[in-house]
Amino acid sequence: MTRKGTGKPVGAAHANGRLANGRDYKEAAARLMSLINPGENTNPIISHIVTASIAYADALTAKFGGEVNQKDHGALLKHLRAALGNRLPQKQLKNLQSILGVKDEVQYGVRIGRSEEAVKLLAQLEEFATWAEDEFSR
Image (tube, rainbow, N blue to C red; front, side):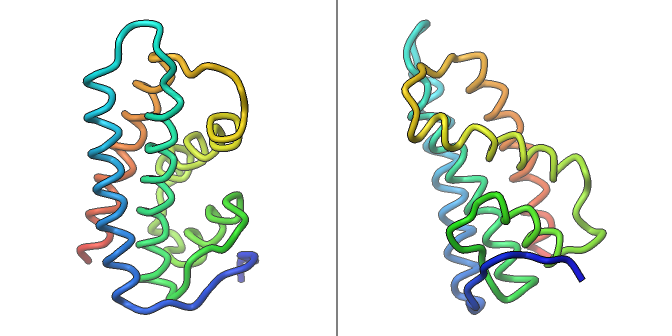
């Protein structure tokens, strides 16, 4: 059995709500990306990408595991693996890990986000979201 860390039991309505939030944050990130000017700080866009990825992962852990991760976003990967088992492709785990890896720096740090990084992370989110939507529809 995989150790998951702290989790909070939730029901089906929570899974659907987190899926809707994932979609909305992904859309917000894409819209902001279309408005960015060269040299502008992309941390607000990346923050939406991070939040969307967490929401998508929460939707899956809620639906298939009956709980969502609490407090420790690093444990989210373990929660997702525990909920989906071998149905979780390594590629999607790496996409999520890459996105979560910038969370603290983007949301709490002082460095300026670059557009190249935001483009890369948005592409990873799009790939992760497409896979998550497919899984969620099972």
